[in-house]
Length: 73
Image (cartoon, rainbow, N blue to C red):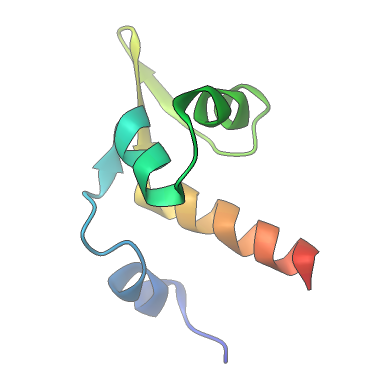
């Protein structure tokens, strides 16, 4: 089934905020923070740096999940 970005945004990760910090992103993806930082450093997930902390828009996490699912199929 194909969903629009708006539909995905409302269904997936709906319990998480629109802008996540690194710990929320890692919790949502069920990965370690070390792996989360690697994903950001490698450019697989786009994040904004605010001061010393990263802020990750939920849509960027959804885009990452879409790319990884497409590669697995």
